Image (cartoon, rainbow, N blue to C red; front, side):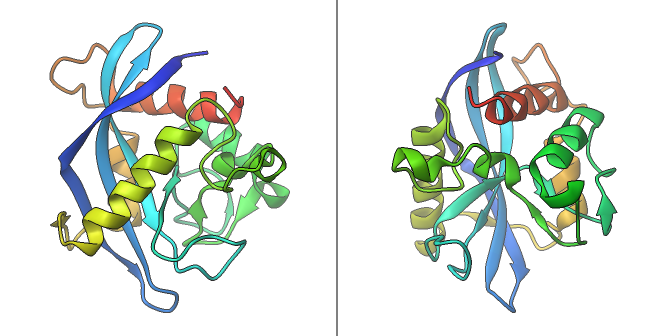
Length: 187
């Protein structure tokens, strides 16, 4: 276990861009503070807005993602740890280009616990749902920064960056990997 709670959403950090117009989806990034066993760290998380077309997702609600698949086939575009988690949680350990890598947040069937699927099944469920609701409301009110060059490549680079944010002791990559590991392990 690496994480204990998510808190202190940095509202002004919310950036977004259109990802798909076929089934309208936005992608975005937002910074939060996460309490780790090694201290409090600022971390960038990725989300997408649902078109409401699949698996009972709610139209307009923002759901967490690991990133976006850039090449059809096996997972190679993320870190070794994240690629292993996505291989374990996705169908046949691979996906098509453009796939929103959200499978760890659906892993371990939240439906059985009476929860909305897509926000994990562990301790971060409520907070991730609250963030998704906040992002929906902020987007609808225009309270976000439009970033026209936010695409799959840039989103993936941001969440797996080697940058150490001011006040942090660990890289964005390490913090994000630890967070995704806890989601995968249902913690």
